[in-house]
Structure formats: structure tokens, C-alpha cells
Image 1 (tube, rainbow, N blue to C red):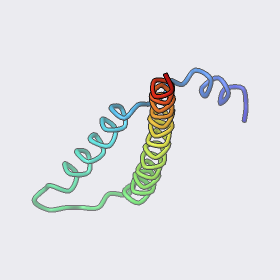
Image 2 (cartoon, rainbow, N blue to C red):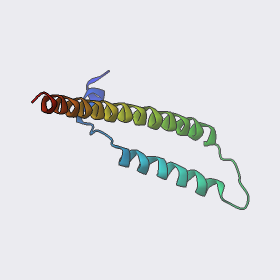
Image 3 (cartoon, rainbow, N blue to C red):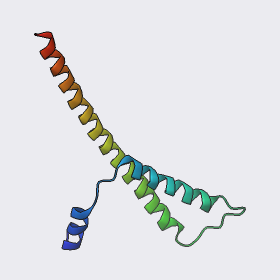
Length: 92
């Protein structure tokens, strides 16, 4: 990883579910517009674009999975704290 890549990574903001939804909505709309014509004509760059679309979809799915896991950990921590508080109240 070069210095430019490191600076991009260090300055990147965390993408939340709302932003992921915006990205996937843009992708769906973009593909729909491209395909919703009276006569579809393939373009020279369609194969490359499709590869990037697949990469974007995979990345969105992976990122969403990470966000879900993070949310689950937060819920588990909150539940453990609540159970701990209930345990303290029951012993009094």
C-alpha cells in the first residue's frame, strides 16, 4: 500500500446502512434506466462495467454483513448489561 492509499484509508468515513442503501439504490436505478429502453444495444464497455457492478454488489453485501455483526455485538453488550442490572436487583 503506497502513501496515497494509506491517506485515503485513514481519511475515509465509516459508511452506514443509509449510505449503503443510497449506493445500492443508485445502482438499481442506473441499471434499470440502461435496460429500460425500447431496444437494448450493447456498448463496448458493458462487460467491464458489469464486472465493476458485480464487485460493487459484493462489496456492499460484505460491508452490510460487517455492520450487522457490529450491531449484533452492541445489542449483546446491552443485553448483558441489562441482565447484570437485573441480577443486582434480584439479590437485594
